[in-house]
Length: 256
Image (cartoon, helix red, strand yellow):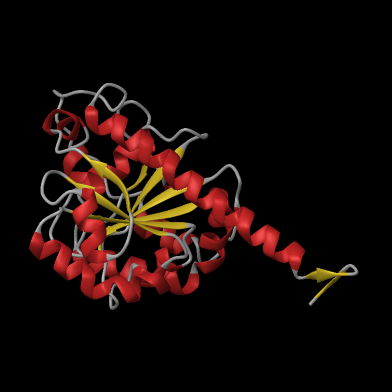
């Protein structure tokens, strides 16, 4: 599965949420691919080299098409969480993303179709001109994160129609305090998939600090586990719907 995570304004903690979801992923192992066009944070947070990472994956994807090629460019955080680190430089990040989305499409399609492979793509702040957009456009689901504040939600409202074409199952996730889920749903006309708490202790551990609560014990980790299950359920529901539609379109063994 290929799952995108993004924001449309501000910094609601997309990278931290991606790590928390991967740490609490309920089926097999999930990797985090840092695809923020403004540059990655993971190398600085966890004192990691930038290679192997996004740049080396983009180069390898020109020659290899198997889903497991992603594993060759993974580094592991303390505790074993697999990540594909993005370059710090925005220029390098945008170049690598352009290469990956133009010549590495077979790899992305293989990842999306592999039953035992899950990659959470941290696309950062996403907009129609983002070089990360083609990466998540073919994703099984897109998690759009925002703080429930007037400025962020108004910006989100202006992009809702565009988002419908970005992914089949875009879902809104609110972060922290502000407008209630009900008020947000009424104003935007879209359902809220989940709400993540503003949990400094849980976020601290996922930001490279030695102190804090691990994802299996933090409020952020618990909420992220519920979100991961919700995303999986949404994907499975859509796949079931597609299968049923294919059956209904079949008459006398022939597809209409």
